[in-house]
Length: 500
Image (cartoon, rainbow, N blue to C red; front, side, top):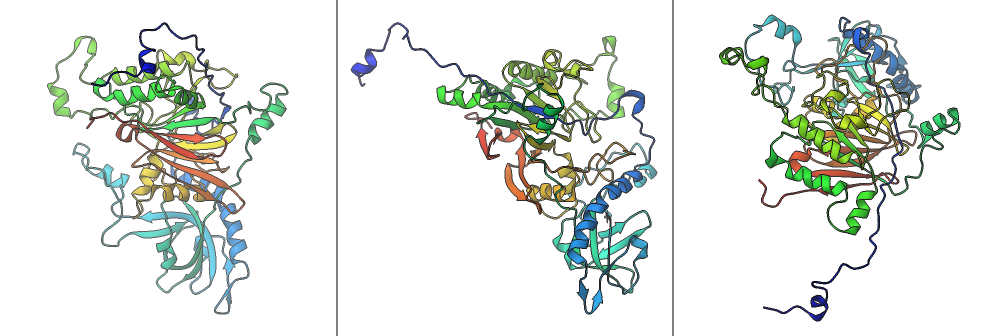
């Protein structure tokens, strides 16, 4: 046994030192959300409209952009002595003529869900398990191009090198063969839209409000934004230890002074969907019939309030120290169809005290429950994010596994949910397709993916976008830190020794 050194022994059983410990102040967050995906409430929200109108709205919004790119690329091009020309409609394509046309892609896939087939079948049979992919193993999938006039089948080698799904807007150049198929020679997409400058929107609003808000709280140098998804809170105490570690770290209650100073630089927390674990499956008719009537009609086996209570407790603990933006996800108590509306404040009896008052015009509260998808300005950067459903649906259309590439494709298609309403439930917009991306974000994050991944993509007009695929925290224990100055990304991982 070794004896303590003189220096160590002199510090034992002594009175507290007169040392003054530093007090860390959390950096402010400049936050200016957009309400791009907020739907009308009450009687103003209808579902009687036809979903087909969405495709025409999307084509009307994006056709000028893709045609501008096509004109720049193909104007004056000659192939085998024939000059390529533009046709306005799909049905104006003539056999043997070299031309180009713009339209909406439709993927005719036999394994894709079909609502008409579902209606024609017995309503009470068990639903088949969801498919991981819609791709047909025997090559029966077909790519169509359609507009308000009709539909044209596309074939050709360039299609194999392009990722395409139902709902994206493209322009194709080629000729129609004797079989009536359009042989594609080249293909163009709308590509990234205009990207606003940092602080652009904040400075415009500040100039309009003279003196109110100054320059958008630009004192955020050195700040970081924490982004996490898939907390998967189930109410089980055995699964909460990792979340407790995360909570103590972000509050600066863990580790030493260096880590506490780093935690104070985190100006905002964004939770990107699936905060609650998947609920129990809906019981069958037979199981419902076997259940006895409960007192006051309440059945504790059908509803477990613990997950929501635990999430409310987590938010209430964090909110006095850090502002939070909360996106709903597939397993959260919000509407299933896209865009998902904010989780109702009634679900958070304690943390809702930090939300903005109903009807308030003073801006968002310290706790902002938002839509999915969501976009807004954080520390001057335009950010856009989802809970993961659009990417998960695009994944079923393509043979690849690269989620980052799918995210890039969505931005270059200028559509945040291209497969809606075909295979992704959504609201039937009538006046404007809200999923069309009008301004290019600086940061695009997608929650609840299989693993963390990130990259930076560039656009034709100097746009630069940081793409972030967020893993599920419940499975990986990973939190993403985004530097608010450089948009660099780092991972912080929490793990419990001996955990399964």
